[in-house]
Amino acid sequence: MRFKKAVSMALAGAMAASLMAGCGSSGETTTSDSSASNSTTETASNGEKQEVVIWDYFETDAQKEMMQTLIDGFNSSQDQYVASHTYVPFADYEKQLTLGIASGELPDVVILDGCDMSSFIAMDLFGDISDANIDWSEYLEGPMNSTMMDGKHYGLPFATNCTALFYNKDILDDAGVPYPDENTTWEEFHEMAKKLTDYGVTGFGNAAIGTDEGTFQCLQWLYTAGGSYTDIEGGKDAYQLMQDMISDGSWSKECVNWAQTDVCNNWKAGNIAMMQNGPWQIPGIEADAPDMNYGVTVLPKKDASSGQATSILGGENMGAVKKDNMDGAKAFLEYYNQTDVMVNAMKQYGSFPPKTEAAKDSYWTDDPIQKEFITQLETSIPRGPSPIWPSYSNAIQTGFQEVLTLAKSPDQAAKDTQAAVDAVK
Image (cartoon, rainbow, N blue to C red):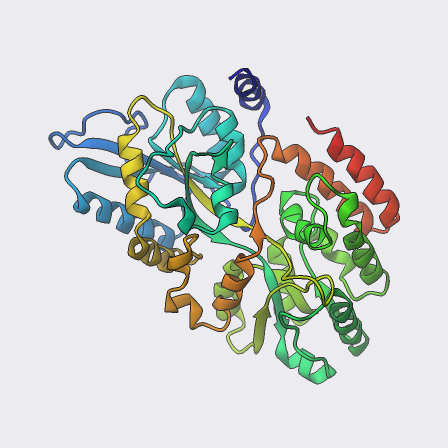
């Protein structure tokens, strides 16, 4: 398609790596975990088995062990393919994929940040696998949508997560503030945050840094207000809430400088009573503040008549690289599609399974913290998806920064951000 070729040329020539917090791990320059070749529709050296190479950016011991367990399980489950994986540093990931498109030196399967997948679909990196033996309807809608374009399937959601509302029970108890829950409205949330701030602890904080990490955390407020990433003015009530709370000190003004780790560190230190953050913070909370008495609930909804608030999806997808022979890639994705395989992998990985049945496992549903994230995932959506998401994100986050620094009124910020979004092509 002419459009795909145009987008491919533009992105291949100028695409910058967008490090999406909450979706993946930040990388350091390291050598490959595997000696496997990147050129992969070839016969493996151990007989007639076809080699299937997977690229990933996993760095922690738990992530590496999960990936090796997954590969060992696939290899022992059949005698037609042999899988291996190659580590590529996260900071270089998009660059290496773009170079691979130009050179033809690519793996069979790519594990990548879910919000980046549509860009690479447009660049023709991934092939249509709609005929794979997978029941696509078994997956959460948001994660599945991030693997698709024009009704076609180019991969499978691998891991998923989102943000929700953490609260320090001891601080709320001392301040006489009830715990937030699934029925908490924006008005009630604001009153809670004001009372906590009057008590002496900033009521709420999130990550609103001027990068896509900030978009990841702030965008849900726009959606919950009735807008979208292309309909800013439809969600301008979110701008009003933000500015009202910044003005009275109940939403930390430091949020425009905070990444998600900064938010969590301030929350653990007792500087803020409630925070928006994700499940990837839980291991750090348990390690650094093992005695903290806290809870998690879904994000506040707009008003009493509204449904559950939206959250924004993070996590990874597995894409099947477009080749003449994609059978090995499809076989690996079909293996991961098995509920027990996915459950075991996500227990090791420390994230949530994107398949509805897998997410019902008692490992998550019996845990009072984890199950709240499962509930929040039901109304979570991907960023975009759009092949030019970075341009949208830049425009959207500029608007949030203007509101949260009181540089513009909500009405003016909404008008100007809408114009900037409309200009994205």
